[in-house]
Length: 346
Image (cartoon, rainbow, N blue to C red; front, side, top):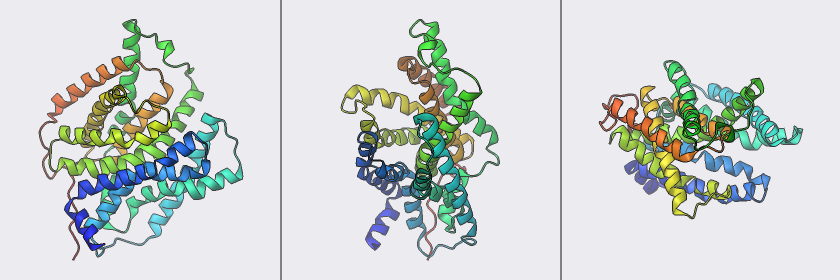
């Protein structure tokens, strides 16, 4: 065990990616079992697999800080947050299941969600109130809204705005009429559905599970060594294949070169945009998670986008951000978006 801990302390970034892929790919069978074979009892494993980046980041941070790291406060605050998050996630999951899959509410389903699905997400959210100072510092910006309000709003609309603009552009160029992209009727019911989908994506996938790791651990650590541009490219390099089993279970053409070319073409600029928002918001996991969840929410309601036009527009916007912020230059070491290993307690 001491040798493993020493290896993790020596190679924290490498350890983070090894643990992340070990959890997600190790549980990769659960995606196929649930999405293709409807073995719903394995659904809790999917959420553990999806939360692997956050879990890996917390594991490495805890090991780096050492077992003797000073503790803060009592466990009461964390347990309160855990319970509140568990209730919220249960409501969100059941609402999503009802409105998007037509599943009726049953007490058994509610108990299954509360005791087997929601705890993983609630554990990660409550880590922002951990008694371990290193983990608490890593996760604090997930629940911190102060100073990030404007960036939260921008994160909500930035990537969806690019998608809507690509729809209008494709329609203007005569490539694809806007009516072909989505058949949703604007109005209050649509806003409600969008809210449910967004909260589902944020808590169960993109915000809590993914960005708590990608932006809570990997992005700031990479920016301690390299420029934001390089950090964004490295995150994207691993981010795309990390989805392999999910995309395979969804029936995507994961064994073709064109699939990976297309998905890297959309995920690389997305990673750069999220990095830009993360840095501008002084290292906010919340802002990064909202941007990520908003993008996937938009895709859910705009399933038939003209990908060529979208990729082109994402590339243009990304280029402007890179030039505007000179993202090829490293950030100062004292910048809040630059992360450092916690000191080892002795």
